[in-house]
Image 1 (spheres, rainbow, N blue to C red):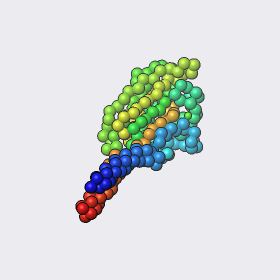
Image 2: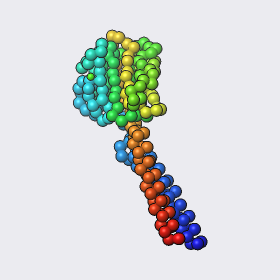
Image 3: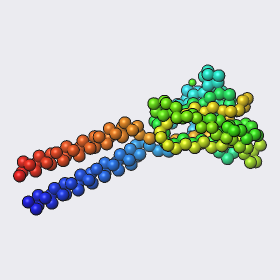
Image 4: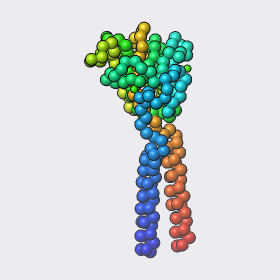
Amino acid sequence: MLAKYSGLRIRGFGSVFFLAFAGWWVVCGTSAQGVSLTTLDFSEIPFQSVDDLAYNGVTFDFKVGGADSAEAFYNSFGPGTLTYVDDPSLTGDSAGVLTLDFAAPTSLLEFGLALNTADALSPGFRVELFAPDLMSLGETPVDVFPTAGALGFSENRFEYSGVPISKAIIRFNHQPGSFALDNLTFLPVPEPSSLVATAAALLGIVFRRQRASWYRRRDNS
Ligand SMILES: [Ca+2]
Ligand SMILES: [Ca+2]
């Protein structure tokens, strides 16, 4: 009886250990399967229009006056070396609207952005973020300030971290003119639905093991 009781305790312990391992696997194992910080410095692929370009988890769209435009470019040379932007970068006509669509929702979004103006602008640009269901999470205005030692450019860095987003629309408050965007950083996260499915599957395994062990104990007694 005592031996049976200690056996039970060991099985209970085993389940706790298994659950802890399963939790570690969901968090770390899935991280190892492609969840990692991505930064584009815009030197990765040759000079080309970014409109409808898909690269490394992000699809770009560029429109001027609501129509697709080829006036924004990957691996383009513009402002040189500023604080947040360093050639090459993504440069374009600041009359346009730049959209970033992420293949996997990202819980972090950062980039540097410069405008070809010597003036501080409030705001210099606005960033509208969208949840994975494409509901708008609102627009964030970002002021830009002249870069010390680099005449003719004002810039700032946009930084977001929070609930996962799958789309960002960037609108510029500087016309006529041009913009340069650089060091685009994002962190794809697993879809909550796939995490829930994985956790449910793991719990199912534990439940079946416990049930089988209960039936074995009942049959043996
Ligand atoms: Ca760069
Ligand atoms: Ca397009």
